[in-house]
Image (cartoon, rainbow, N blue to C red; front, side, top):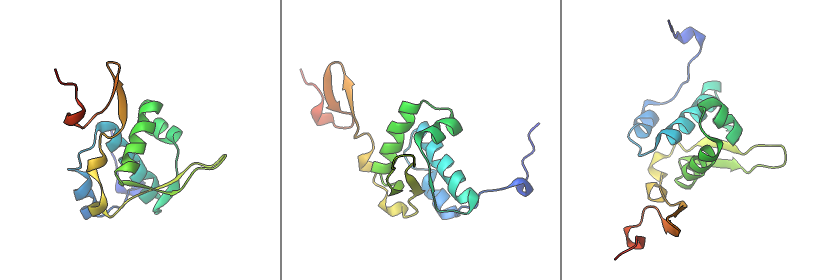
Length: 131
């Protein structure tokens, strides 16, 4: 039987920030990435940390390709900020963007995908095939 106790550790995060994250229109993988980032930064009293796709894969158990795609989308939506790009042997330094007013959900779904032999934007009804 699980018995979590504050004495065994906790992650300090403002209620205001949690209030912004909860209703955000994110998918399950994106929520997992955001929560893993919060745990890995705020959980250790840091605001940023060098984290790679392998870390998120290990922590969330999600597919590496899916993690890479969703992480990039979170960066594009300005929910996660890249403080420092990766270099040889060093992961990107990531942090949660606490300025939730700057989060840009218009970027959600902007990644292109291959669908029935046609390249189309996943969010735009104007680019859908008409008969």
